[in-house]
Image (cartoon, rainbow, N blue to C red; front, top):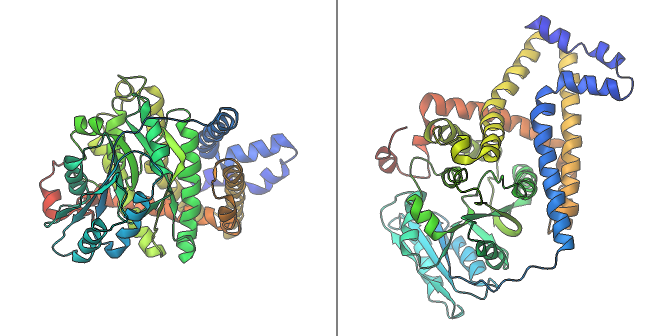
Length: 446
């Protein structure tokens, strides 16, 4: 192993060969093969998709629609307390001319009385518009997030159902802009964009703000152009009600929102016109973990659930016949490889370098990796500011933190390997805080 690394990473020889474009290409090929073969093509796919979206937005006239179905907003509430009022207020203040039905589901209402009181107090407010109706549900026994969504679904009367978190607020054009996509009968669901509301609470929240801008708002804008949206956020997604009912509602085992996305995509191979759009101008604002410890705990659950969903629950449905070739390849590359396999390659490569190479060489390599990823990140961030962002001045303030972002993502990638091992060895999805143990125990074991 040491001999292989020394041959591959003979930096003095490589730097001597850096004479023009050919030398630079040789260095990148030998040091960043996975980046060139996997990550760079995906990045270019996103970039070309963003450019295509922007050109269409600039050249076509503004889209107007008279399609105004009733919208049912299922808001899952557990421990938000009075903060849930902000979510309900932003939904009541929507500019949408049609009916909006608000269904806040208070899970474990017997112990979450402050949340229940906030919801019921909002229901009695006089300033509610005539086409805004609040129908709270008090679930006295806690059943978890999936249980709350299904309880809300059973009470919905709208043809469009939004699954929303009780700690997420929204721009007032959200409903009107997301509903217009459902005028196309081939749209079973629409993904909305999420921003970090508490961006400047800490270093951890600021890093997550950059991550959300790049991996959600920009990446999904580009992927949507090729009908390759990889996930509908659990905190903010809209669905055609008849589709969710035909799927049997939300499923147990895991609260990870990828589950419902994969279940919908399993019909793409048989119904080729189906598509899941992403609307970058539909904005939800959510609070992110404020400390690195809380962030790592969140990612422990998220990344562990990914392995469970890809390798256990949906292993039989991730096929070209069910998903269609484009979404199958995207799921295998961006899901299975980048999110599940690549963290172990990164950890193994890092350990091998630290064990076999001199510390000067390790530092030089780390600097090279930092420079490459920072350049790519800076270009992506600039493109996002110029073409996608609806708040460019606000986002520009994050610019000084960009050099630290690759290092933070390296730590999170290494942590992903631990989370995946935890799921592999301990089935950590069965220990999630998103549902009580008596609910998970009754679920089918995969």
